[in-house]
Image (cartoon, rainbow, N blue to C red; front, top):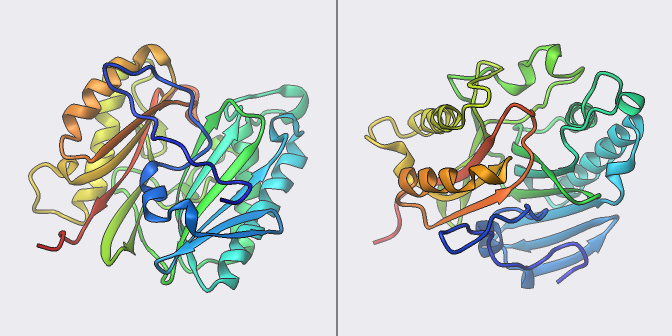
Length: 305
């Protein structure tokens, strides 16, 4: 195990478990796919794991919570450039990125002006992605964590992924300036090959239609809208299925308010009835009015008989 990766049990919520703050780690399925025993070392601030033609990289920005806006944007830009170049040198392509951002919704006028920390983060990410000129924009999620450190993890594959956009939503890179001077820039989902199967990797999905947040302060309505967005992504690839949510094999749910955990868990276990694993954790979503965010993955090619 190298310095940045951490081995831990999945953060699963059942009737016997308490909702815990999110750790800065991707979902458990990534660790199953690339066990930490496959670590290949540490270079230029990046930890890396390689195996099965895949590459997983992790970069940490210590003390990011205390950074001023300009320093934070520059650090994010440099981190994304370092990760992108590391992946390119390994002849791989990023398909999925997880961003764990301390104080993601903070809006400190003295440090950020009219911007919140997520907008500041997006400015640095945009600048890096523009320079990297990737073959396909990867799927991404960005949530707030209690740590002082900002962590970026990426999964890369031998071939570029196929970007999938949601017909119910404006593509993230076309967001208006009301969501920051630079748009978020991520794919809603990506089709890629993992373990000789095609998968649809669904990024962080919330109650957003077009670019607008919907159903402020209404948890049930936000859950329904979020699930409709996930269904729309899956339906675009599997149009003949009656219940698209039953195709989701691994699920992670971010809950902004601990008091909503029981209701969210009940809905998740009911609607994702065929999922092998459902992780539910307490994390801040990128917009303060959003109460939940859900990500997952769907196997597009059947298991071997």
